[in-house]
Length: 350
Image (tube, rainbow, N blue to C red; front, side, top):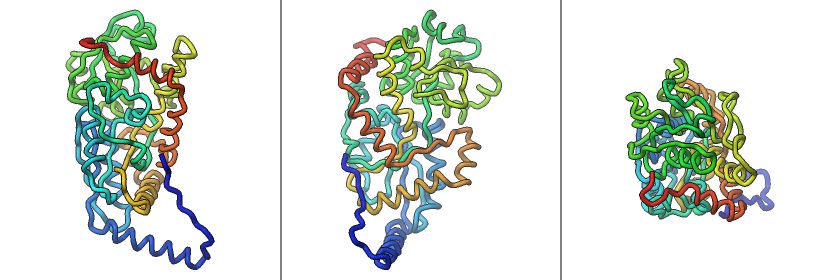
């Protein structure tokens, strides 16, 4: 990916000040009375939807020209529907951005979404990342009345877990647990989204699932406060401060090769909520949006709203997000191939 760099070649102080003033005025004109559309690649009601609405509400305060920000849910094919729309049909003027499932950031190398039946029509190397409000892993949770109480139980006893599409994290991570860690999870897929998986848990249809921690803290906080569920594993690069006693998948991996695969996979959890622009957005507009996004991340009112939603604030900038994605390109192809083989469902299998 070619990253946009601003070159200041021999500019005198006064012209530079005037240039900044002109940029500010240009930003006002660019977004004055506009509507900023934030497309979310998931159903309403869980972590992605909640974070999109929090960012949208504060982004309109930080952008010049007093634009209005609205959130539109566009679920389907593990957010490929939204990403394809963003890439092929969305306006290129900075008024449309997307929030896909974080598996998208590994698609150039892992190619997991396209192999799960989706039609990838986008090239993320041509798109522009604004950043992520948090880094957060999936967690494997079970209802308190389940027989599964530890990772040892996951490996020795069968359990039923819920998932949506085969390209969604709640399916992929469960499958990873079986393929790389020796789990015996029976995956029941076909739920419309995380909210429906949670309802299935409430009804006793499934024992648990692999979901983002924020999905639980945002929409089912009583599950944790009332100890209605237990978390037995987390899939990030290191243990979260909120879960100091829950091991990571990397920690319990059986060998160095498996650990390498899991570290590569954990990059997607570093960019838990990756906000992205379509290609061909002018560099100055990308800059304005990135600056506004960064200001939202540092805003005290935004931080309070994130805390009220029982979500964590651990932001990464657009530049840092871009560098993380580019870093995955250096992972040996053999490691990526073995991970892909482990995660692609067998024909006709669960």
